Image (cartoon, rainbow, N blue to C red):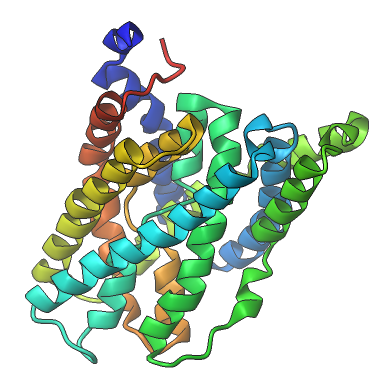
Length: 322
């Protein structure tokens, strides 16, 4: 693939830079009082139940890659399998760090084992590869959600009850509706004013959500004195070992190119924020999850462009960037 010669670190860095600028903007808005803590819940409800489902639908409708049943199923299987792989790596690392049940082992396992599969990954993926890869990541994320709300909850709580109702959320409902329309080949009927409204409502979902993430990180970072072993352990898991697993899957497992594109970006992601909520709901240690998120997000400023740049070349992909 001679076109790979035009892929440079600079092009990848420029692609991921807007995400971090939005995080910084959110942090600045929190520090200056423009975006206050009491604003977050209302804004995120609009994002999660209106804007994000509209964005998901807009990208899935018309996506030819999702007309293949095996590709859709494989994307969901990998979404489950790679998150479970990440949790396993994080659990082994937690034992090496001397963590045990009651001292943060469960929270570290879920927090370090789960990459940011949505708000950070989607904008980067859109810049690098466009609509086909975007449609695929939402299907992949169905598997991720299933893994987090089943195995993740059981690990965090120590119980076997799975809150399946949590899977009935805006994005998952939107993915399910979109997939059904695409599979039935009637997605082309969603046109005109309705499609325009869906597109316009969805366009701001990720910029707004990323700014809220930046603001939230400022608030949460002061919850507890940082632990060096938690910080270093999370950096090793999330920015070294887990990326190696995900990139190996992208290179060696049989899959459509759009799914390979999704995995290359997923490999570079910092920790997800969902485990903070799980720790609060199911008896974990939220402060540890916060440390993992803050440490890996800051660390990913340096590693994310390099992982994507190297992953593109090793897997053999070509971004749309010149």
